[in-house]
Amino acid sequence: MSNSHTIRNLTTLVGLRSTEVERLQTDMAAQTAVRERYQKNLDRLTSLYTDSGPSGALHLALSVNCGNFKQSVMELAQQHRTDLHLHEANMAVSQRALNTAWAKREVLDQVLTQKQRIVATEQQRMDVKRQDELATQFWFRGQVK
Image 1 (cartoon, rainbow, N blue to C red):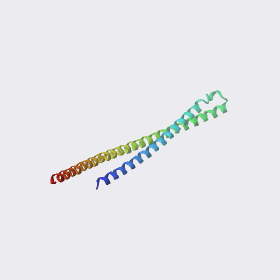
Image 2: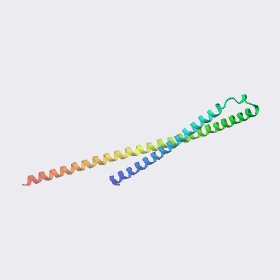
Image 3: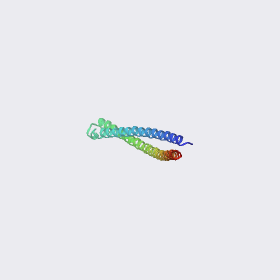
Image 4: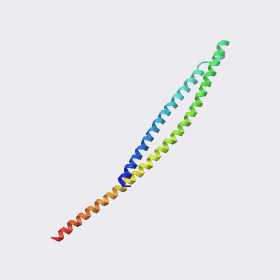
């Protein structure tokens, strides 16, 4: 496999890995936004059942109604907390996938950079050798006359 072919293939792989990293970063941003919505909803639900006041100070029917309302809101808040914990666990898995993809891209980028340096060094050696051969030919031509 020629050096230019290898470099082209490595460049393509680095580009693909970069695309994957960008996709995973976008996914993480979306998941972060969902987590923030969960947090805001939990805050609203908590304030909803805490700000409704004491239910025992009302008439019996209203007191029962207020108690049932608070109980339902607290259950909903607990369900949201559970959903939030599950979502955060999914976020942790996504973060690990992002870290892994980023590491793979970095490794490929380092390999590409190293290969490009090797090819550039080889090209410089070939150029120096070619210049030396030309200089030797000119020197011999000057000696023949």
